[in-house]
Every structure is written in C-alpha cells, then in structure tokens.
Amino acid sequence: MTSDHVTRRGLFQGGAALAAAAPLATQANAAPSAPAKRGTPMTPVELTVNGREVHLQLDPRTSLLDALREHLKLTGTKKGCDHGQCGACTVIVEGRRINSCLTLAVMHDGEQVTTIEGLGTPEALHPMQKAFVVHDGYQCGYCTPGQICSAVSVLEEIKAGVPSHVTENLDRVAFSEDEVRERMSGNICRCAAYSNIIAAISDVAGESKA
Image (cartoon, rainbow, N blue to C red; front, side):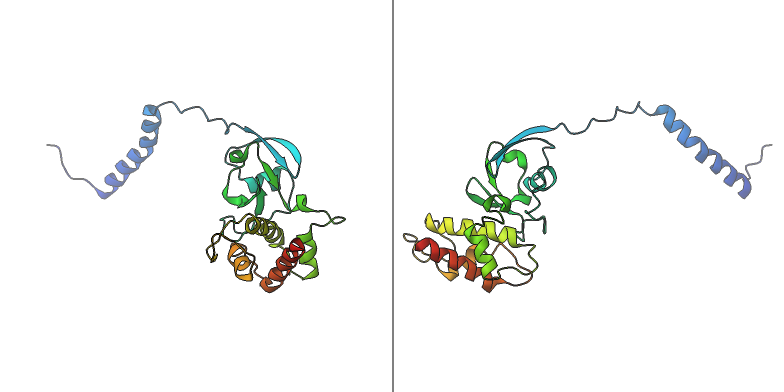
C-alpha cells in the first residue's frame, strides 16, 4: 500500500525542482525575439536663422530650442523650465515671438528664426539691448535673452494694433505701462528686475515715436 504522507522536506525539494525547470520551459516555448528596432530616422529641416540658411538632419522629436542650442550652438537662447512657463527660451519666428521649448523644429521648416544673437552684436547693439544695459534691466542675466526678444516683439505687436487682455480701445492700441506689463507677463525674471525692464522698453518706445 502506497503512503500519501508528504514530508515537509519533500515538499520543499519538489518546489525547488519546479522553480528551476520553469525558466527552461518558458525559454523553450517562447517565440523568437523580434529583431532590434533601428533608431528613429532623421528628418531634414531647413531654417533661416539670423539671416543664414541652415540645413539640419534632426530627430523629429527635437524641439526648436534644442535645435538652436545643441545643433547650431546658439546658446544665447536659454533653457529654463522647459515647460513654456518662464519665457527664457523666447525667440522670434516669422515675426512672432514663441517659446522655443514648446515647439518642434520640424514644424518650422522653411521659416525664419531670430534669436538674441541675431538682434545685435557687442559692437552694434539693438536699441532694446542697449536700453537693457542703460536701465540695468537684468541681474543674473539668464532670462535676459528671452526678455529682450519678447520686448522687441511687444513693440511690434502694439505698432501693428494687436490687442491684449488689457486693451481698452480695440480700434486704437496704444503704448502704456499696463500694456507692456500684460504682454511681458509670460517672461519671468527671478531677480525681479521688472521695473527696470519696463523702463528699458518704454525708452525704446519713446525713441521709436520720436
């Protein structure tokens, strides 16, 4: 007569044998592994950056900010939050200011891009750059390139009659401190040089009126 008694030692030994055999069975029954995927194909992108035509081969997921900084070495444009909340990466594309961290380079194929390097040089500063120096519109300077690019576009927006949330008369968009503060609200200065930035923009606006 066969005994049905199972010892504790026998139970452990049987479990260990099953555990050791399981991976072998799984490997034997597994489907052949798929071949490794190739890298993401590169996409040709042509831009006119600061008046110069550039031809790039980019991963289609590359942001405009990374294309400028990593591929063209235009590091004046800063990476701050990388979420479109601080404005440090502001550049001018086709005459309109945008956060370059929130857009893909491939989306701007064939378009004109202006960065802080394209506005002026140390020998020939743009009026807005000069005004920021005169009015001390910066402290650490990290946000300054985005502030200046945005400020240049703000004056163009007002000149073109583009209203903002604080515009009282939609038929006549006029320069005012309230207009500037509202339009520049997307550019954060962690050093809080806001009053000096407003003074610099007002100075340039006064020169343009003259």
